[in-house]
Length: 192
Image (tube, rainbow, N blue to C red; front, side, top):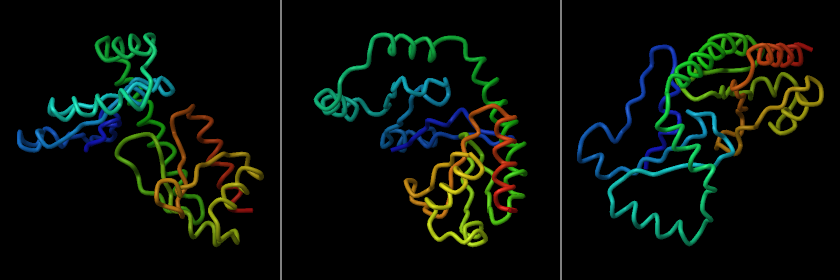
């Protein structure tokens, strides 16, 4: 099972190689999951798709037809246009994400106690904040992020739902000036 949803959103010279492209044998064993929410900025439309061997996809279609409702026709037509229409906006969006990443990453890495790995794709930073929590006297990431929300007015998602309870997730899918201000506030919170 290969989740290729961020496959076209990679940065700084990195490339994405789908596992299904490695060999015909691997392709035949792979189900690729994708959608329009990330590459085409269509979050909320809930349009996804799977690609794989016909007998597997047919079985998946039988199951899904009994467990979910159908997409609205407007979502289907919008997805068709996104997938088959002009693709130039994807590169513009990718470049904007890359600029935000390359601007915000070093700023976030300067925040006391934040350990940040620079991502190669997607649009999230996922710093390890155990040291930051210790600096501020917190042992629970929820309490830590709630304090940042209350005092710095920056909303963050904890990493607990992603299997990393001592991390936080920061999306850079917004305006660069807003991101700079958010990181400035987080840093001020940590230095207070």
